[in-house]
Image 1 (tube, helix red, strand yellow):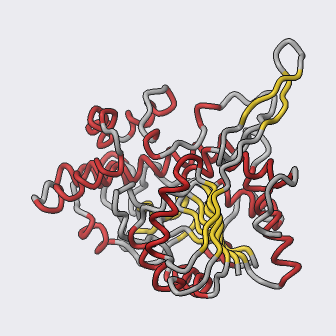
Image 2: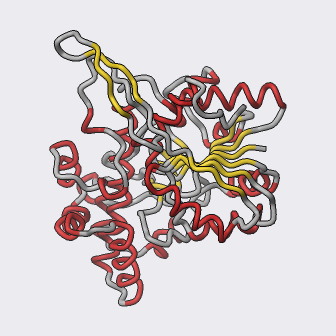
Length: 365
């Protein structure tokens, strides 16, 4: 059985050939250290989410966003810093809207590498009778879009069950920008505040928020952060802020069971744009397939060797190959001439181009 693991580098490098009229390059799905840029599209969100605005100067100075959030989280928990915890909760709402906006805009950028890999997986699954599992640590909806196109699903519809309904299954251990849980009781918020505004004002910690939420995770085709009407229940995003250790899963129990069951039968793993820093998932890998003789293909730009070192301790019987080839494609220049462009070694786009040209083997055969 085959498993594909995707990190931020996959979505960042998911499009390399753009439609002629596309002008939304600022919505390229960011890498972790690009989540808080000083550009107009992001600045609009800083005005909506004051908790993010309060942290912005430190976020901009941080050399490692995950380390920064881990330190803030530990401090807020240790000292019961309610104001800081409210800011961190506010970050979750910000990330939800940012990645939703990026998903909407970037899905119109051009042909997607996700479409290509999903087609490969679909043909493999149909010809072998084996399911294929995609495990994505990305909050965006670009892979969802590729799956909906493959299976002919309406682009404005997606239920939580659709993620695992077909032979290609999508598991998101850290949640998604379109996942929510609802509050058990209506939120009584002044001036028709949104859930984000109310929680920032009340300064509830996550234990308090957790006690107020229904257990079921729902998937929606749009974000729900509008002003609440009287008697209306609020929504809380189901995604985790980018901590260094990232020790919690945010996914339905059924999805977790499917992920573990599929990992236990996995023989081959393809890693695209993932840094392998999630400790809880590392433990899950060790538990489910640590004793299996896996073949692992790494497509990770310059971090391939570091990812291999990390995974070698988790998967001691695995054999690794690093796909670090560059790819060069032609493109039309402004004067009408045909030029060439390097896509960069070890990236998602280079891997797809090199497979299609026969330069490197296809993970799906």
